[in-house]
Amino acid sequence: MNRSQFLSTLLLSSAMVLPIAPAIAQTHEPSREDARLITATQVLEELRATPDQNVPAWLLQRAYGVAVIPEVIKGAFVFGGRFGSGVLTVRDASGHFSNPVFIKLAGGSWGFQIGATSTDVVLVFVTPRSVEHFANGKFTLGVDASVAAGPVGRQGEAAAGVRAEIYSYSRSRGLFAGVALDGTVLAFDPGANHAYYNNEAANSELITSGHVTPHSDSAQRFVAAVVASAHGSAPSPAVSAASNTPVPKPASSAASSGAQTFPMQDSHPGSEPR
Image (cartoon, rainbow, N blue to C red; front, side, top):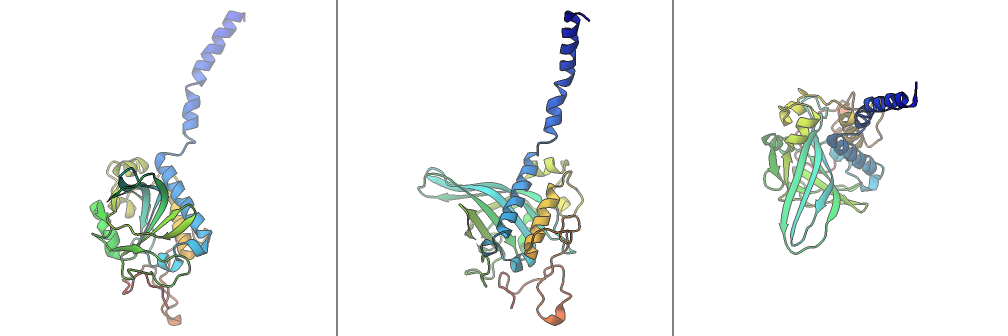
């Protein structure tokens, strides 16, 4: 083979290989939705590692739903507001947490302010009505469902709004605390849900009922982190996304050790069981 033939063969081989390389590389990159789930999972795992700065396990055990919205941007010039994208999981009738629903958070405020901050937001839904509102596609915190800053770590009762339907938290610069989110809108994110479940018909009802399923394990890892947080421990084979062990409602007495696996209506949602 002369030099000319060799170069021709080399160029032809390169042309056949190069278009394949980017496609192979892309298969290893997480989608935008996977990245959102990975970040939300990381938020829960980091909070669980600091028991004194965490959503109390006893509150999560009573939760009908849990939402994590990482990196919510708050603040602007003159007109303030907060915007973020996150995920929500709700319990089904058997007490298991559902596949995640992708959501958006948006809220405005009026006043002079400069600059922006990024915070992680966690919402705990403690009544059936609070999660049922989301079936409509969106609702406003403090209007369609009462919301209050939640207790943190080993605190006993929420400092305010003991009867709130949703408890809200934020983490900024390493500090974790309850936060007031009245007027903030939570909405279904159709683009993200359709893309992640590869189904244009995917809505909150189909996702939470299990009629559409994810095509990656990022959803399972997120649900496992929620379940582990409710148990107050790290994920284990006994508390995995695959089995999604139902989180028991705290027993009211020793005689009720076989506790319900689905949180029943609580006359004082948010207050620590005694």
